Length: 374
Image 1 (cartoon, one colour):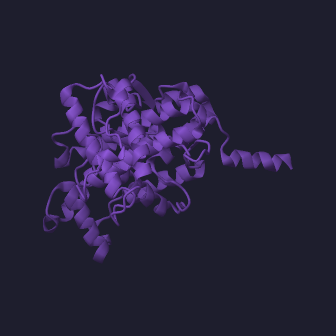
Image 2 (cartoon, helix red, strand yellow; image 1 turned 30 degrees about the vertical axis):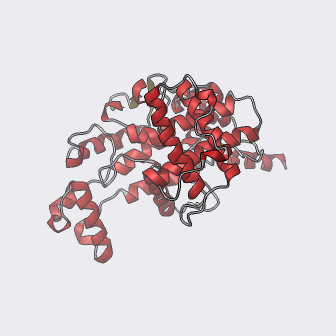
Image 3 (cartoon, helix red, strand yellow; image 1 turned 90 degrees about the horizontal axis):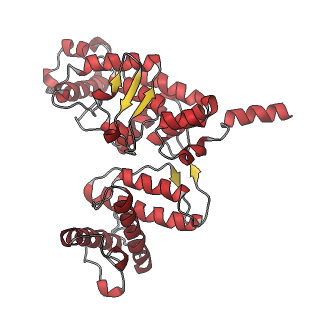
């Protein structure tokens, strides 16, 4: 730990009395260790880790109670004791705040703020990804709103852009720094030293991984956690669907069958053939891995989306452009075209109220209405 542990005599409660009876002796010791580390981090460096600036005593005091409340909710609703919290648990908690927690927007915002501080600690100390949420509450009292989404035109541009960035050029057509970049990329893909790459290796790589990943996400609105868990066992090429079993579902509430476009099914079929050529996939059923052989997370997916936006000429300034932006576009346009029931099934929502946020008219349709209104 950086700096000293918090002074427990200052009134900052590590484990509130409301948690009595929830933990056995071993869990209590484990929980206390996590909490002291977390609260000490907030106290010493949490506000700005780069400059080692901590939060005030008042803020740490409030965060201690709010994060403990989040923990107790997790244990009640997500299968019992666990530490540290996960992104899926935080997403479920925020969904519960949105539709079942009968308190003010400010109260909801403060509780979400606590979960976000947990994530900030886990990012800095343990290398976690930034968590993504369907909703963002304003702790000062503003209303919660769905995050930004891609327009129809932007969705189509993304589909075209991924065919460009996924394309592997012939070795004779790239020189200089571009060639060096491709040699590094091919080395990662094929698990070979760069100086061992020859012209035949360029022909092996067809570049269907990213087109298949992006196209499936544009159809199914995959959450980052679902991209990470995606398995070859999910793919049903004959029927053009993903079959996500209950144990792999991000919300873990039932088996899901998700429709795919014909072109998406074709991309997956080509990717599965190409995937067999790569050594890194020999001992895993992971549908997609990064160039370094890791499963995708929120950060790597955000980087991919920003690459696609740059390629497509889509402006990202003043927008929160995360992988959830794709998901929200699926919900918005599926609800418009086929209604909320279809959007609920395609997005795999447990609670119908979650789908209600997509009962909105896209901006281009509102613009057309204004033109007709005169």
